[in-house]
Image (cartoon, rainbow over all chains, first blue to last red; front, side, top):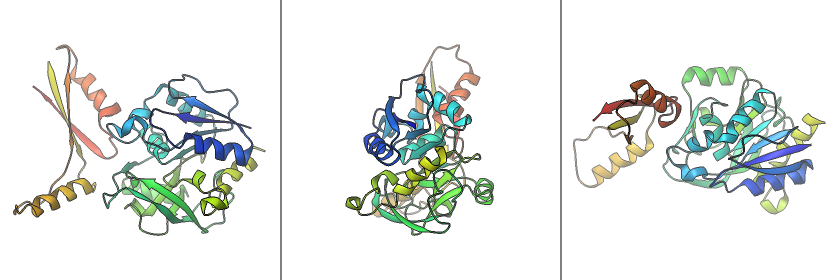
Length: 221
Length: 76
């Protein structure tokens, strides 16, 4: 199994993400700099990590979404390669048009940094098959722009097609319909604000994020 | 040549920043302000022959996020 973690100037969860992928799935994991025009061959997973790419200039994720490597990510996603975007990675995926909607400033204005309760809403995707439908899990968030917005037709479509992967089980950032993570139409691209890579062993305070990565092994095997 | 691009949130999109600014204005003792919405002004210096359609393309491809924002172009 092979994985790539994309690194932008200002990414800061790239190493945590690589450690989680390598440790849980055993994948040979490469960090790929954003200027790369091509990705390594034969990838089974691409991860876009959290952080503050380009200092959040213009809009969170806006500059990174126009980086050379993102064209290769869009192409790989179209070929069915699983793509996981966490936090800033989720913002980048929406800015790149791989996921619908946008992530706006938290409704309460403040940066939110704490462990939150999530409800698992979809257990069909490679990322979520390790969870039980409706299960409550605890995963940390750390973001200023996590307030998910999409027009009501898009939200209805996402819900109707089972593309809401995770929902906040408590008030966090004002997200439309409490959406914390969404899938693309083919289910191989997941964007989520909470950080599963920060909750993978007891010393983290829990390991609810672990099954997301374990699900990817089963998908590929 | 200079062009100014105003990027604003679409109607109906909540603007927590605007709301906070509104509260701050009221906190300073000003009354009579009904609503505040915050946007962004981008000024570009360019060749005179840059077409309006090119500027519009810059807006839709990068400067504005069309999911949540509108833009207006003002040639100086």
